[in-house]
Image 1: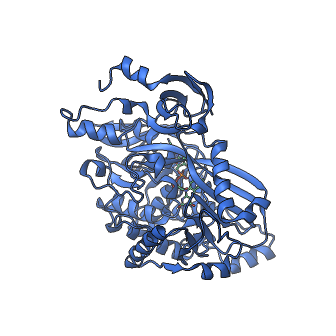
Image 2: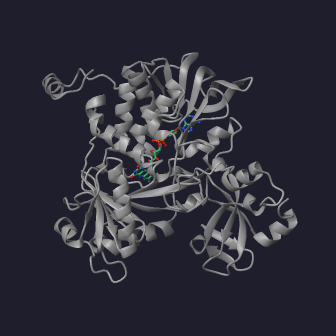
Length: 416
Length: 94
Ligand SMILES: Cc1cc2nc3c(=O)[nH]c(=O)nc-3n(C[C@H](O)[C@H](O)[C@H](O)COP(=O)(O)OP(=O)(O)OC[C@H]3O[C@@H](n4cnc5c(N)ncnc54)[C@H](O)[C@@H]3O)c2cc1C
């Protein structure tokens, strides 16, 4: 069923009786051409682009819970393409371009809102670094503008410009950055993939791999064995647990990131704002709540909840740039388990096992990557070659010295 | 989380920084190790769901390194030892 304004009108006039489920609930078949493990944003996008760009239909997405129960439904919804390094920036710019056409493309309202992202500058050295980053962004075809304090005051007069320790000296602004309704992304991709024949199988946990002479030929699941010509891991925070079943050790640790939402307020934030001297970022949802977050907790965990010291640290970051936030009450908070990699950058690659592919290591920044991750993973699965903007995302890059370390923090996943 | 420091008693986890997997105690000998040994040591991790032995540094306290055995599913701390003692009994770089 195609969604349109006319459809809403006619359905409204006929008692809304004609709506059908957005995707089927099929039982798994005995075998597929491609199995994707993980019904998060990336897994569903991969299935969608395999069907849409490469005409492949005989595909299953296996999800252990329900789709959208992972990080795709837990993140703070920020999208941007403001990276510095060559291995990253063209990939994230492709992603932002795909976001811009996404809703028309998959005929679903994902509330893509390019309200801009403002990264504040608090020192001369930081201005130099951000000017350099802005140049790198513009070289890749992205947009970046350096603003002075007077220009920021026009839209955000409530920021603490004269803070004694971290005065606001300016900002780098990406007008095309913004926010997207996160779970609508999962639903939109699921619907689009399902429409093109992909089986989305929920409550189906992968518990092992079927190997035949060093080739992966299928998976064991909680709903029985399923065979496939190609098996594609795409499980974000669970990457190590799933890869272990294939005997792989990964350059990844799982860590928790927390998110916070305040009570609903009148419109006050024009877009996304980030603190440059500590770690704090905030936007305002369409319901009015301030949505914010900061650092990861820093210890390995699969618990999907964090601890109080980070709550304090995040709130202090908020108070440092935006003292008015202290008047708002915190409504709710939660955590998600993320696949932190050794250099802070992701992987989209074949494994050393024939027929087995890996997508992961997205750290706390994989939501913005969803469209390009699916697009490039689909390209790899369908053609056998990496997509030109994703050639750097190799699993063996630590062996070859080709790390993509935006932060220069080295092999400490909790520092990226 | 509360870390039961072997010398100082119960301490708030916020006083510590975490380095990660305690297998980092066993750095291969740089003069004899192969590329693969070094690569695996520096970049690959078990990352288990369940009991995990990890290195914690008491930065805001007595600056000792501890080996904390912690459940990554529940955050329960099961055991805390001085990293020095662990390294000695395990024979470092084994
Ligand atoms: C609090 C928080 C805030 C964030 N904020 C941002 C942000 O503002 N901007 C941004 O770009 N990124 C952000 N991120 C990161 C982003 O959400 C993730 O990088 C991204 O969602 C990961 O990809 P995914 O959507 O495919 O993951 P998920 O949605 O986690 O999908 C993985 C799926 O695999 C399933 N699975 C696991 N094991 C198995 C198995 N054995 N069998 C079958 N299925 C399995 C899981 O159930 C899950 O549904 C944030 C993350 C968190 C936690």
